[in-house]
Length: 444
Image (cartoon, rainbow, N blue to C red; front, side, top):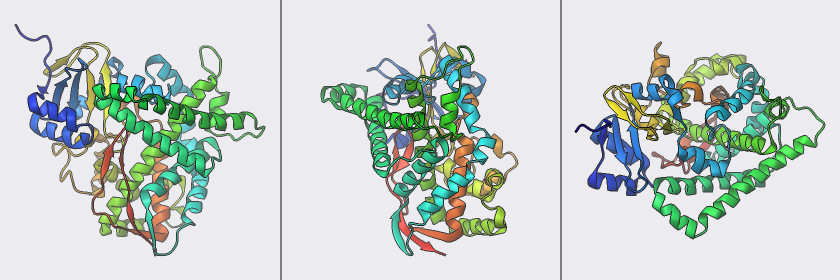
């Protein structure tokens, strides 16, 4: 009797056991190797959780899941439930009609016109941060960019001052929550140990502390008579179409927390990878400086920051090689099929973006840093999804690209950076990050 569903090649036996045990610490290595063994699509059937996973680094499959049949897929339970219990019910973790209502409320705050008006605020924060540089200074750009990106989000989206202690506290909480969440998801049996040891309860208390910090920002705004005309004002004043009611404080805090995390973490991680690649490619830095010089007084204008340029090519190529959104998960709402494959409802789909971005089927010299490849007139059709795709395309894409372009140009107009590291250690948590980027800064 023929099986009811036709999964891609299944990873079994010792390789499956290895994948489960080693996937906790080195998911990139494990998933990449599984794709080498099984091809661009494979599956793992979990005996412990009775869940079936399909992993893919196939462009057509990715397009099918994210765009062509997106209505049959929600964010998986991994994000909507497990991550949601720590971060709340914001855009990142929400699903269905509730997600769509929230997206429609928040989307206007991220229009190109709104973002263009934020350049001067971004510049002020960047200039303030760069003024702390000393000639021939040793520094860790990873930590520097996390602090800078957080301050930019706080000022541009919420016009808020959060003291340095709160910034550090939020950053620590975010990292610790990701560490625990990762263990909970990748080794389900281990979560029982974490629960027994009280680690899960402690982590939930930390996430509540993060929300309390954000609530403080919201309370400060409500008690102020000054109109800021920023995203927070818009979120407070906006009303749902169906009820004409505002967002509850709980929902506002959840959305603000998600925007703080997504708005600073992915950008800071991306900037670390961008500056690493520039430091390893002197010809790229030279070409970048020439573009900065040639742009004259328009170099920091919003329209120039958002248009296609060598600066944007450098950013895109670094994000291809090191995509902070290293994987996208979805869960099937109903049985589905694509080409020769078929699978039942509740199947978990893991779209392996890091693998897709280095798949030799779609990229020439996939492991080489070649910003010029994005000059191709067909670049928009590349197998390239650093911000996702389809209706759930990252709401902050234009904000992030403009911010990164501004930081890159501001920095290389006056400084250079020589990395002490020839390789970066990568940690694949909710986002892909490194642990440091140490080197020497010099004034040019």
